Image (tube, rainbow, N blue to C red; front, side, top):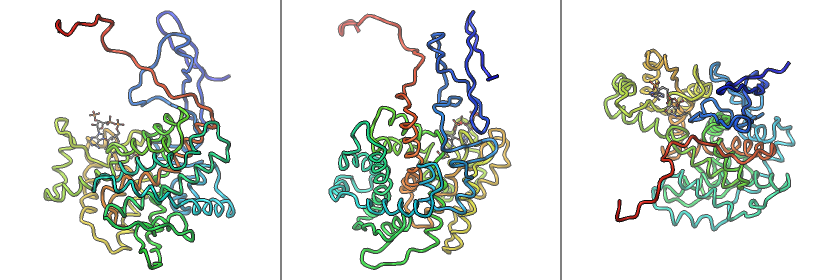
Length: 428
Ligand code: CMC
């Protein structure tokens, strides 16, 4: 017999179906609650609310499990590459050799962005934040590729927009990087795979055909895979909710980019490095900064620590910490903030405050140190997170459309004034 849940409100009792996911996750389906009883549920920050059923990513925060389409993040980070993972997330299965070659080939043929988009860079103030530029440029793709605005598109038409979105994102990200130094942009080359092409446009030379360092290609693939999806987080929920109004893919992704920017979400990778630098300049006393993080009267938080769903460890952080050691060694980089990060982690993991609240290093704690070793400036870090998260956002947007989900529209409990009469100016 299927399980039901009962809710008793005043004198009445209502039955609601219990939904069980493939990993045995349970949810009470309260979609008929208001119709039946007139009540709604209240869950600020959606800590207990499932917004959708999804077959893309599974996450068990207690056990530290993360899987894309059933494949563990550990295996994907070790054995796969970003473009294969992008295909997996978006289309549901690992691609065959031919499928991935076709996918890569199609993307390569759309990496050029409209020349007029370069004019945006003349308008942005110098040193404007790369995330602000990225959000604007991605939204503007809808102006340059207006076929994406058509309603009721065929699968093939939607797919074309998906390919263009993936293709143009890497060009835009590398151009933002180049323009931040006032350097001329480098155009994509079809002979490269996705990640190599990105590194070519970012660190390559205009004239010479330099070989892309395989260490960079490898670590970049790993970082992008680790960021590629994370089920219904703040930015992904934003992409789904914006897309649920039938908004085009570019604008939906742009909204996700804005949500990601905040330091409590993707912006944490920039905030971590700034924090580590601050601690270093202050003399490197990690105990002092741990005490500040624990002090409820001090707004300081240990950036890169804690997570809404991971309450044991963040499996991405484990992989990144090891990658960080490996890459710095291979590149011969000695970054003093790495030592401070390790000390902070060690102290925090033994401290009751952090232990009781189950606060552990998250994906952002070590990623910035790697980006820095690769040569990216701090304010580019969150843009790199966005580049990695793109296939996840696309997959979630596509799933939301395929499931024909209704427009996202939460309710509220109103706590303002009840009705009152307008007061004339002279009487106020
Ligand atoms: N430093 C100090 N105390 C913390 C921290 C921290 N980084 N994170 C949480 N706490 C405390 C918090 O003060 C609260 O204490 P109390 O119960 O005494 O009031 C308790 O731990 C629970 O925290 P919360 O803020 O209620 O938890 P949340 O689930 O709403 O927030 C979080 C999760 C990630 C926003 C939060 O842990 C945080 O602000 N971390 C730092 C920012 C960060 O690293 N964000 C990146 C997240 S991973 C990348 C991504 O996918 O977005």
